[in-house]
Figure (spheres, helix red, strand yellow):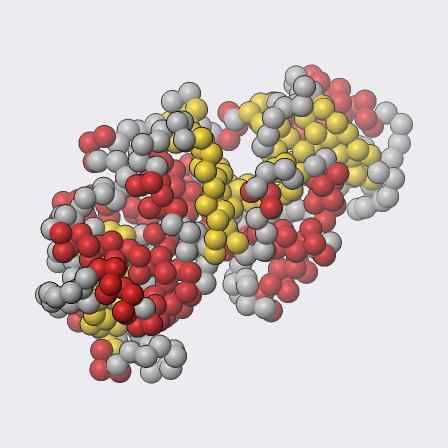
Length: 439
Ligand code: HSE
């Protein structure tokens, strides 16, 4: 166990950095046994270095100036954990240019500038580790890049946002409204003060852009990912879903079909018989279906200081191993070698086919059902089951239908016609349903 230590500089001293630093300190002996070399925390830069974080690192390695890391020729690995886009991109590219390896947990940065960063790293012959950017502690990036290297991936279905999964699980458990449960989650510290990126699906879309890119060897940009959040889901929908044998989850879905890629984030009904439907609370899970392997499922904590910090340290260990064996760049950052990536059409949401749950709010009067089903029928949309309840909500009664397989474009056209009917007294809700069509 000899050799000079591998030197690490942290830019950012927040929650995830503290988790990673705590692991580097508390697991020093284990890490040395796994690596055969010491990992040295050489410098930590942050705008604020006075606050006590409860991590035992020497005060003298703290600095407010990230260039002390970027310009230090002895530092091998730069860990970027400041979040945000512009400054993080500058630091990451500067580190790569200086020949340093990079570890980041920054999903937004990679979803937007991943291609540029990966190309720069390939040119410079350095590694970029980003295991912590998707689903915190779940090693899904390494699973796709290495464990599933033999697989032509067919589809990925991920519960990749703990905040949304917590809210939907609590709505099922307690019957509370979205707003009440969100407020409770904020009070408990499970949800951000500004939760819009989480509940609006944006955070899941960032993670899906990264997963889709790695799985299919193609560029999937954020703006091509159809994104819908969970704000409109009500306890009634959760109850109806259960009556039909489904759970509602915010899913990040990507599929390879007909040489095109589907990439979308939206609330989805999945059968109560699936393992994914049983993933509750703040936990994340990713289902990956491979052509020869079949389905695999990865489950764990998708956020938090120690789980995310653990993923950061796993990248540091992998990069340190590559440094020691002179094999940096061994695994291409985007999972496929540069010239082998292919451009594919990302299928617009209007072109997908799905099963649908439709909740109309209607006046309880004669002829309503025939008007609605008539319009659906005129767009070739066939109903597989239906529930109407007498209890009034928003001046009307809920009328819920499950469709057979239908084209999204037809469904949207039918809904805009139906929503103009006088018998519709409230907002209509559509939830896509994954599963087999009932025959
Ligand atoms: N805010 C995310 C979540 C964790 O709720 O899962 C970080 O991506």
